[in-house]
Length: 143
Image (cartoon, rainbow, N blue to C red; front, side):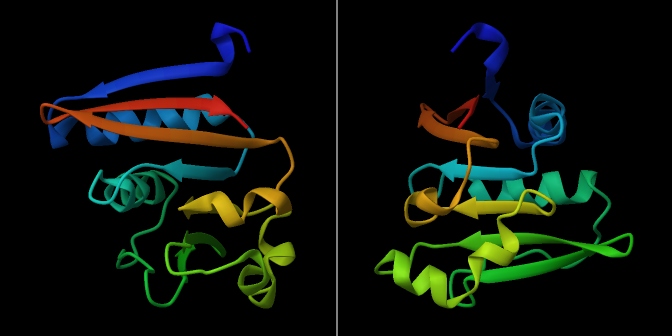
């Protein structure tokens, strides 16, 4: 992987979040599936909210921890936000009909994506978030 396929960001303050979200969308280019790897409380949902706003949605955003999938409206289409934390296996994901979502035609933001990986091609953006001394470090790469 060359440096053009990796983006590193540092967020010291929440006011920097919109700029970081825009940088991630720009980095993704035509890719529409984003995989979020981060510990609990790292800000995955907050970052996804900013990205969805930039993509034109003004829906109410929340973590789909219990519903597993949230759909946000945007200019006649939809954005999908998945939280797979509660799933026990990939079979549960199949029961949700993931093949219909993960075709690369729709924006999908996936928290805790480990069970989704077998259903994805290599046209995704992997986003890793780590925290050290209240600074969030974001590393985006092509999956």
